[in-house]
Image 1 (cartoon, rainbow over the protein chains, first blue to last red):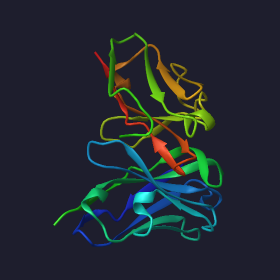
Image 2: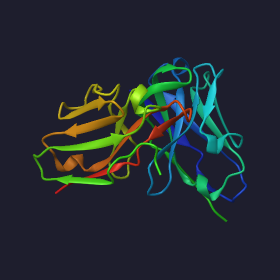
Image 3: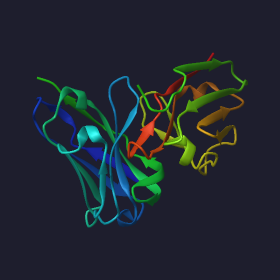
Image 4: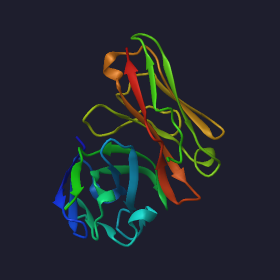
Length: 123
Length: 110
């Protein structure tokens, strides 16, 4: 059974940093593109970043380029999102998801999603 | 403002059918595959339709997808109270170089 479990969310002050993790199981993690998608409270979905199987390619939405870094550790079956210089607008539930039928720079769809982790940026 | 336009809400009675539209442009829907996601209250999104009109295993055939030009449509027949959820369309936007989603449509089964 495919499982994606996010962790690392919490309350952080504006300008602070946080690293999210997504532990994957039930599939061969190293053979899939992975992605982060976020959802601000009461709002819709917003794609954040992609990472290729071996980490050699990464893609970001313009609003997070620079402050956010996506990475992965295939030996630990874990996806990460390092978030720096956080702003109130980054407050959201962050979901990791598995990409399918991916060819640079995108995947055709996301077939499994984690339950999400809430990041709150506030003083 | 979302790049893909969906109606904020739709409603219908149990047993009836409903369609949810997703309107875009040539840089997104017009030249890329569309997927649909169902988000039940308080839960993570779940893949409902991929590649415009394909259903993952386990998704009942009451759910269908179609695409024509720069618009896509999700159809749901035989509505059940358990279908009450937010529905999102998504695709790649070649101009923005980003995955884009619609603003979401809240389905109410009266």
